[in-house]
Image 1 (cartoon, rainbow, N blue to C red):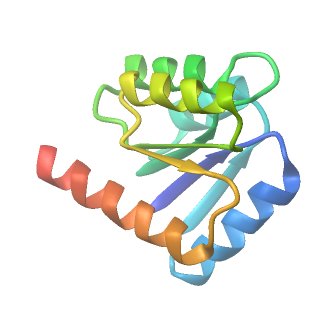
Image 2 (image 1 turned 90 degrees about the vertical axis):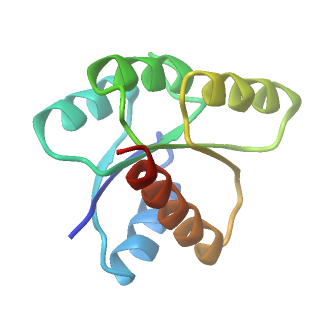
Length: 126
């Protein structure tokens, strides 16, 4: 079973992502902050991490950079709402090695497709 870590300060978003991914066979771990997410990432095997760009404390971009320092091959999906600042932040997240960037809201199908593409991209790089 593939393990997905969801880092988002919005419990509704985390719960929605967890429900969609668990219904398609993924095991999901949740974290509210970048710091908590990094701890989860370091404590267990995580196949994909979904990171919100706007987080309390360390930003999503800072969290992505920390994840990549810990594991340069980390598979990451960056997510954020659609504002001008978020567009810039998602671009920065891609520069920090996020494999995929998604704007909220997204459908369950878009999410599952993104997770599958991210897994394939990581397999191709291995």
